[in-house]
Image (tube, rainbow, N blue to C red; front, side):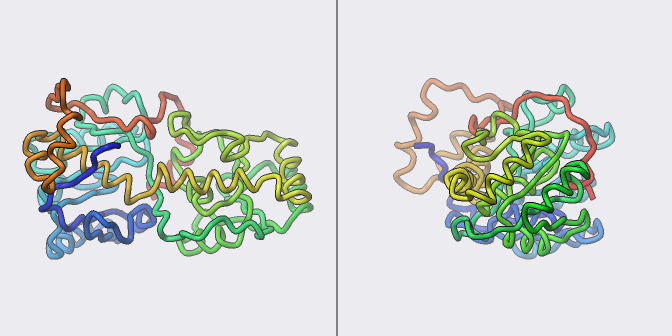
Length: 346
């Protein structure tokens, strides 16, 4: 069993970022008090002040490249981690990340990234681990709603017009607009049984909708795949279909929905086993403290944990800057278009 105990002094963990990241933050956690501080209209200073007044012992910031060096120094907590949720292409953003992160820097001790191996520019930064954005599965703990008969299509990831017309003939279909709010996205997912998703990018790399759909127990039918190292299995947990085969899969679901019951249940379970926000961020903070100072971290564990943790370090050399990679959540290399990057950067 992996040791994930945190220092006893870590009582309050603040999450900071644009409102669209709120659903990736645990509303509650057994290991600490958690709270999301939304950044409105790029007013990072106000948000950081609010987190400081709350008394955060650690801070996790989404898109740290948006924080200026002077504000990064004010982010509260003895441990500060920046979560980079989408690929970084701009040299200006990479240069800022180099200024605000690393040991001895008044900013972020660690960063996370979603791809592995790291691009050359990112490899020079203090990347703790590769990690896709998790999902707060506690927000919707009920099992898959297998009785739902509606199709959901994202406007930014819709199939060709001919396929759309044929899909509309099979079942009620809702198109989710590109400017949909989180509340609208949640309502659409709650009323749907199947998400149809067409994209040139790998699933989940720029857009969290496919993961959100799986976490709610929808049947995902897509002409793209997830990053292989996320271990979301084709056919077992979602269906990969192209062109006419996508329409055929929907037709089979309409006529024989019981055939896909197991797929939907397995996907619902996978999100809770490997992508739950509370568990993922607990592991991340454990690794952040452990690799920053192994001996100090072990000394701060609750009594009785030190002996159990000792074998983990036996014979292992931990050097400054060595990344800790959770093998279940390590995306593979790849080259993808920036077609849908705006979903996360807007």
